[in-house]
Length: 155
Image (cartoon, rainbow, N blue to C red; front, side, top):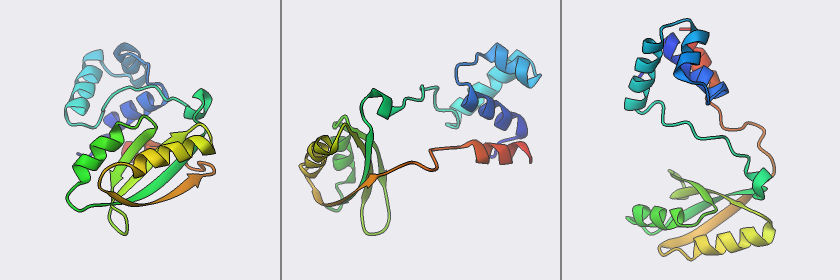
């Protein structure tokens, strides 16, 4: 689905201030409240707008270490492995990938010793055959959507 400029402006506004209500969004964008509500409903139905979770700094709640692991798994077991990884609280994301590994896992920990514990849990998941883990030293480009939304506004 391509975004029209109003959809993109609405998503930019909600990206910057996710707690805004429909009425305030309509005021700031200069369109009727019903138009904003209809746009939000349509964006939600189409899977573009997936929710309004708070942005949580994991470091601020004690999980200052982020690591990425590339997992090689037994063929045909991606679903089972993903379900078992989801049961590990410190596993934040799992992506199926192409290339040498099968899954890319983002995990967090409180310390190096805690990371070792998390890695041990990951390695103990049945059908995980090999792992390669890297610790993130910094995040020079955090997750973002703004440039794509800004491009849609200008079309």
